[in-house]
Image (cartoon, rainbow, N blue to C red; front, side, top):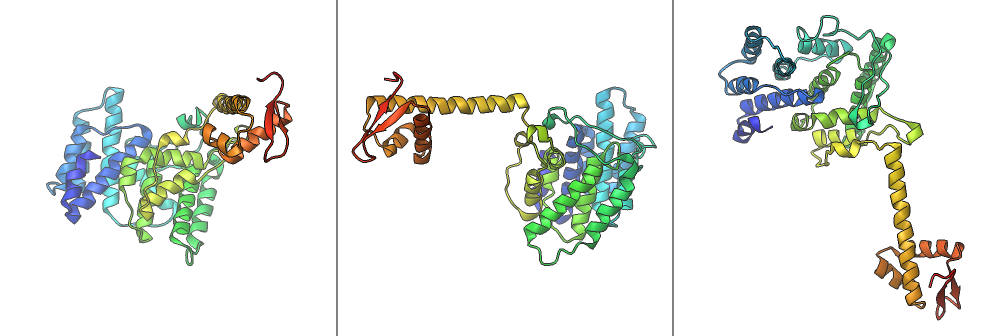
Length: 351
């Protein structure tokens, strides 16, 4: 985000780290379509410049909204974005961490206490959920059952804790970590704020593993991060859509390996059956046009070669041969004489 670019360019380590923390904190609000206020940006800058501590930043934001209670939906959204951003920035500024479900729950509580209802903040959900996803055309991921969340979390954390990364390539390690992230996100331990809590937990976990992360990814592409998690956990066999880690691996490749994968939310959008059918129809029309063009060329020059047809139509030689074979089977053309020295004849009054 352009708000803190000046501090990143200056290269002062302390200011750079604070700027990155605030960038991540603010960027992560995008996953729930929230935008922090201009007031928060100024508070963040004061903290980055050393005018106030991270604790003072959080307290000033809290006091601001006590004096200026949110009334409209926009103001409520800004309040949530501001307060949660300040809390994320604080969590990222400390390096205390414990790899456990309890830590994930603690992070959620730290982020959302006083913002969500008491039965939501830092509490495992006790009800099943669905969420309409735009990239799924309104369909939902199948999330973990509410009556088995803790058992599933304990299992996933246990598997990750005892997993031996020794001997794996960097890419294999990164893909394993992406898979773990996908798994705990799909369990969806919390009714709200699940992605933000998961992201903060993973960032802190990666730090303990010694990874140098490009946290600009969370700042600039948090929406992509969430959509990639959605696609990693969605399948619809009736529409030939399957679980795919492709997009999440792209994100983690950029995050941890310095790759430059294009992160485009549009490529994750699934197609409806109607759109798929339209695409197939379009391809069939294109094939028919290719055949019509070949027939017209042959009618004008029966002695034309396959290579010449390829050059004129723009099709590969294999593509031309496939079209010619299909047209022969349909009785549209026939070969007169040998391959060399012979010629084509257009049938069924095609001339």
